[in-house]
Length: 183
Image (cartoon, rainbow, N blue to C red; front, side):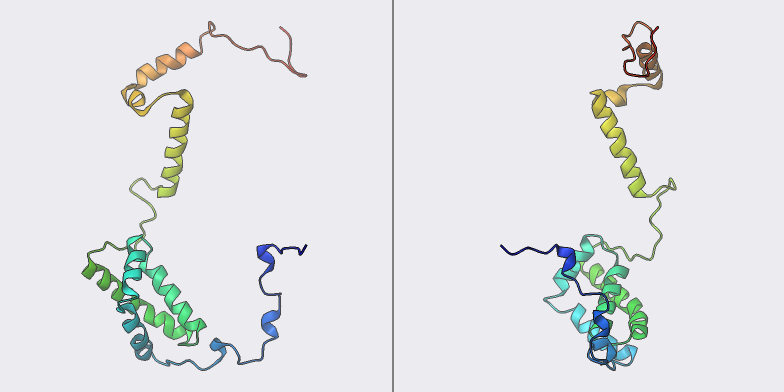
């Protein structure tokens, strides 16, 4: 019976990149496109390609920021040896604008990723607000209440309920265990 390796052991051995001949990797070769104009002549036809454009629009519609998509495209271009990282960074704004134009033409709302929309009007991030809402919902569920009951509860009635729960008439369990004191 052959042993199966864990998935994280399938990667390259540390230092393996140093064993390849110098110049055998695409990014170690001179780039195919030396200027921003040449790189744009490579990217623009691909953005409007009938096979790629619908997939791009699907990704934009899912809410992925245009800056993220453009950065992935230019990093891929650098890794393939199409252009240098410098040209890739200079091409990014044009790619972002091109994707925004394509999304506008398709009637799709898009997130450029350049706005600082991480914090809402409250000053808290949307993820923090979502966590708090989930916690509140779970606490309401534990109490056996539904949202209509909570919505009808006024602060005064909630305070009365808390006071009733704290009255000595409520049965309190006596402490047990090794460190419990007897009355």
